[in-house]
Image: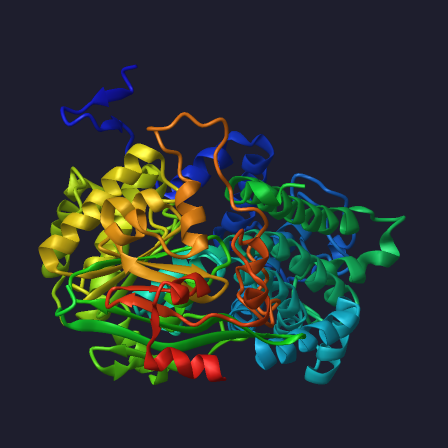
Length: 297
Length: 341
């Protein structure tokens, strides 16, 4: 009862601070333990990527042949690889590479995909036909094959791997936002906005875009995980990071002959990939449940 | 009333939808005038073309498949149906504003009330300062009878009740002092006590600013309470036009009579409420004869073969029924054109 006060005019007023949609989403996000665990992992790796390289015990590319394939010890926490390089230091550096690739690839594909998706969903007609068919064609290829094709055209490097991953993810975002726009544009507030003389561009920016962003945020978080795996896969195939770069997938590829003799050369990079991906997936699931309960399946 | 200046004239308006079956006219050669400062009701069942008429006036008919295929819409003498989208944008909100049926979904859930009202103000007054806009927003919220206007500016739509949201919508629509307000079933989604408040508000604002109101409704109670003149639509056509007193005292078209009989009347104890048998025919499905003939208890052979014209009983009362012709109604010039088509 204390929550309610009665105004003299008879208008009951619920005493409640103005809670925006974001604040409300945060409230429900906080309740999920797995989402919080995911966020913790993500934050950990992000911090590792940012400040980690300043504190690592060994220089990453320093080769020390007397210390080849050393098992984990107090000096080399995760052991050393076949060049005698400290795996722990390399993994910390690798976090920076993997997260950069994951993050920027997703940003690029989300921006381009959202733009194309919004245009095609809002304007429809022939624009929609062209863009949608274009997405269909891209989705007809297995994504990793497409990425390999793009990298072979551009030449193998981490930057080109990033571009390839960005390109192959565009149709996912495009189709997602297109379907959302199709439903948002039927909303009455869009009609009401047109009825007060708002221009199409403004309606897109003010009403359609913000109300279509939620699935993109969720998909974006989950896509970072996929992008990291794809970058590692390209690295493993020798199409991503180049020789001395401590990219996780590349580290796996370089050490695969030591699987039996020095398993730590594989376990730790693999574990790093797995943990980061798990973190982003848990966080993405939590975001989905918090932001868009209807998407829960 | 008759001498008042016409602010909106609808002449021979035809709005069609194009489907696989060809052209279907949802609004079929509709004529009416809206005078300065009056409240005019358009009544009819669902699917009669009321909403399409109002969207045609706003230039918001979804296209494709819809299109205005004939006629003109004169706003103070200028035919706005021929305007480009850019010109229409200046008219919308500025000269003609519209409020919708569903206040619950008419506001963007992601922005505060203040943000959305400011947006509406800024569209047509780009040079206004932040302070001016804010003051105007507060003024408008007070005007539509919302308490704690200042606080409301920072609240989100979900914190408001349906009635409050409809008031916000009205405030947004009236922000630029439009000459015409189209209210498309503004009270349908609200409960009865709130309905009465919103109608009272529309009447007061109409009085205060002399804004002409086009009230689209299917509720004759709303008509009786707010309007001066009534247009009854059936299957895309105007079937009766009269002052509100005439409509209730002396309805001429059997459809209007049926509508009035289906309103519960406290004075008589009736076992069950009257209802007009059947449904509104699908637009375009009645090719010959009166469109109401299938449901009409007075239908004759003539009604099945010939579409009646809009007969004039007096300068303010017209009805599309052969019974009126027998009573001595005459056809005016415009209508005989339709007949001869």
